[in-house]
Amino acid sequence: MKKLAVIAFLVMFRLFAVAALANASAVEIVAPEHAKIGSSITITVNVTHSGNNIFHFTDWVWIRVNDKEVGRWEFTWNHLPESNNFTRQVTITVTGPLKISAKSNCNLHGSAGERSIDIRVP
Image (cartoon, rainbow, N blue to C red; front, side, top):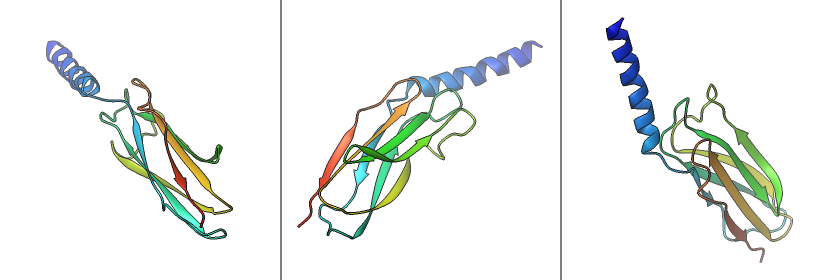
């Protein structure tokens, strides 16, 4: 019984040690700087976050185009992101100048903030 308590303590210590080294979830947007009206473009959001386990994880990510949400992914303790660093993509048709924004959130530490870029139309 004592051995089981020690093992449980070590497992919990390891999980919380990882969380202590963790950070807020952050995003980087990858998209073209220019696009023609009518063309399709792919927007990639790279999410970075340390410490992805059942107690501590990125719990959501969204992408907005001109303030309209075009992609949203939600995660739970039993449906985690595939790794600490992962990507999500959406493809849209260009109808004019675009403001792309994205944000992700850690269930314990919050977000490193919203990021945005502009795509110009010649």
